[in-house]
Length: 172
DNA sequence: TCGACGATTGCC
DNA sequence: GCAATCGTCGAG
Image (cartoon, rainbow, N blue to C red; front, top):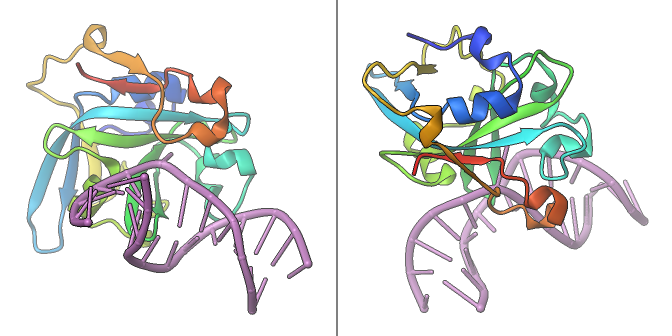
């Protein structure tokens, strides 16, 4: 069953760990469909979070994070990778969760490549998209109790206070 | 317009 | 250890 705004409309610190074990579904134009089980996420929360892109304020790139939860936030980095994020929260407070790893493919850059992401995915609604969404996992037994939290990766520029926050969630 | 830099990856 | 590679954003 597809996850919609009820799920993503909550605070990112609730949504990010609960995404572990959920299923990422990508349907391509040729009809092929692939499913990845999410096993690593990171939370980015608010303008005060110096690791969050929204710490620079509202720009064309960060604008979608200020909207309601349940939208796709993609951005291009290092000249070659599309990073997949979902907006969270009720709106007017910029938040997003980065999909950092799946059971099948590890690394956010490699996931973006496998999903064939590009700028046209920016702002797409997960509750209505015909090509990318998230589903409950009917078979997984991953429970919140088995999820561990660690500091986020690659954000040392944000300073110790934010870099040390345990906002990276993964299944052991 | 110009230049610095990045929520990464893979090869040296 | 470091190059690849380009969109984004603030400064000029």
